[in-house]
Length: 161
Ligand code: HEC
Image (cartoon, rainbow, N blue to C red; front, side, top):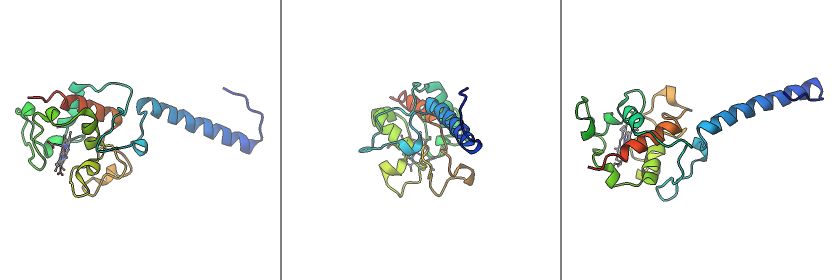
């Protein structure tokens, strides 16, 4: 701890700043690219959202998890043929890795509207403004965190055939 020489008011300010910067350092480690800092250029996000490489097995869980990605609600997926209720609102994700690069998949997941246009009903999963079809509890938050997005990308990249 730093011993600061200060008036009471200034000390309060210093410790408040110290506390908030500690928080932002922690978030920075987990999510180096916060949602407001993500740059989508030509339908691509080249830089991963986190330092930790995506885990395909975790990504597979998020894809099917009804409370998280819930991708299966809109996308049929051959790789999950044992699971019930595949939606058909979006295209099937079979062999999706042959159609998109990792940078393109990242942009689709982070902010589908930036790739497909405003009319898409696919939610922006790493965006603070997530669109009308998103439950109130998600407003002001992202649906997935950066690591979950990277995990799902890793999983989608396994869907080659
Ligand atoms: C509410 C429905 C909905 C949900 C939930 C949803 N998507 Fe989509 N997605 C769509 C639609 C619709 C499209 C087609 C783009 C358009 O709007 O024209 C699409 C397109 C895509 C594409 C491009 C597919 C292709 O072959 O062109 C990928 C990849 C994708 N979504 C992945 C996901 C993943 C991964 C999740 C879960 C994290 C997800 N989507 C959740 C509706 C959804």
